[in-house]
Amino acid sequence: EAQVTQNPRYLITVTGKKLTVTCSQNMNHEYMSWYRQDPGLGLRQIYYSMNVEVTDKGDVPEGYKVSRKEKRNFPLILESPSPNQTSLYFCASSLGDYYNEQFFGPGTRLTVL
Amino acid sequence: QQQVKQSPQSLIVQKGGIPIINCAYENTAFDYFPWYQQFPGKGPALLIAIRPDVSEKKEGRFTISFNKSAKQFSLHIMDSQPGDSATYFCAALTQGGSEKLVFGKGTKLTVNP
Image (tube, chains in turn orange, purple):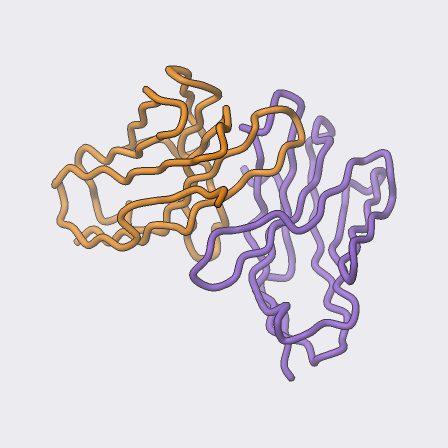
């Protein structure tokens, strides 16, 4: 089944404790992206990657890191999480050509205490 | 700066009604306008999309109307059903690739039986 998977789905952590949210797609997509979804703010892009070893900042990159060492994986790293990073996070992928549909993962609900 | 303004924030209709969700934009470089549908606990999924060279696109009960001169577009759901209850996001894309998809803040639609 073609899909985008994220792990973990739920995470409660404390301020300052480094964490990684994994994202993997099995569709051989070139493009991958991370979004955060907050009530009343919609979906905001954190980082995106056009291909392996090619990443760039989205609209809200502060406090996040990403890497793209393999085509299928695009982990999101929070080196020192803070409470304002409590949010619902989505990974997405697409073929990368213009107008292509983005396929979203199921989401990761993160709470930083 | 919000690039795509979406309204209303929430909408309640009765079964069979025709909910309308509106979006407006300023950036004339936008040239692709998708709508995503998100059910609770799920990631968004592409519902329907339009390019500005057409004024209307219909897929089943879902219709996008596009007014290029007014820089506005809207989603109409004909004969709405309780199963249509979800959050709807409009989005816009500029030339340069799917990595720069910009989302509206979302509309939570409730269709009562």
